[in-house]
Amino acid sequence: MIEGFFTLVNNWLFANDISAIAIRIILILALTFILGRLVHTFLSKHFKRTARKLKIDETQFIMVKRVASLLIYVFGFMIALSQLPDFESIWVSIFASAGIIAIVVGLAAQPTLSNVVAGIFMTAFRPFRVGDKVRIQKEYGAIEDITLRHTVLKTWDNRRIIIPNSKMNDEYIMNYTISDPRILGYLDTSISYDSDISLAKKIMYEEALAHKDILDSTKDADLLAGKDSAFVRIREYKDNGLQLRLYFWVADQPKFRRMRAELLETITKRFRAEGVEIPYPYRTVVYKTDLPKTTQLRNGIDEKQKKLELSDNNPSEPFDREPL
Image (tube, rainbow, N blue to C red):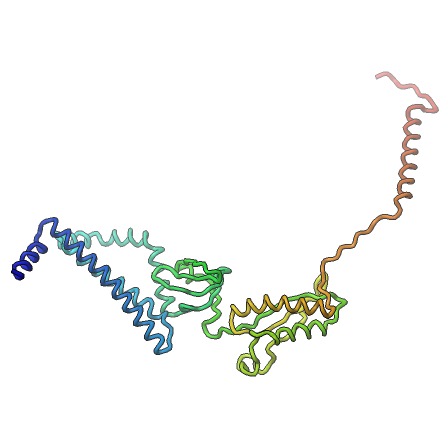
């Protein structure tokens, strides 16, 4: 009975009527989708486990699993098409017009193909990796994913920016973690020309060394070359005061942003407490003090003008005017 059931199902599935062909195509596409998802999940877990065990970057495995899934989908689609009647004649006609199709598809899919090629190149040469902290077009964040078409950037304020791979391949990218995440940060502040420069530099230096995120020069001698973890330089003469710049070594970009904001607050409080003036724009207004004299002069000019007008209306020596 069981053999008869399988024989019936086999004869029905491999029949040449339209319903059997449609069911076969649907089953093949469904199995292809399931197999593609299973392979993608298996490779993702396997590559993550391998990356953690070998302590290597998993970015180089991303394109492998995506290409493997793509090949499974393409292969399943081809098998589904092979179920159509007169499949060989259809392919002969397709190959006969392959040149025209290639031109049309190439023009239509040029942006997509450029994204795919750029994604493969980025995965192979790895200018950035998944998890790297980068700055792209004034946006700072971490690389969250690299697909065949685009790259996902997770910004510091938890936004996701989708950037086509071709754009990523053409942009200047500042990578903060590709080799060494440590940063020489800086903070600019101004003091008045009357303030004590040595005291201001001492305050800025002490506040930087007292911060919890400052790097220890004794532990990071390879980077700091035996120098201090922080130092202050006079940077520029401004209109309202003298500009000082505090340089300090910090572990990474997020800590730099936090340390810079906290140093602004602590240095300002120390400046106010110890009499270092932070300059503000000054504007001097000059008032005229000779307003009465000006008024008297103006009255004299008005009187002379009136006398001239009277002399024009009443001439002392009359003269005859010729008729026009």
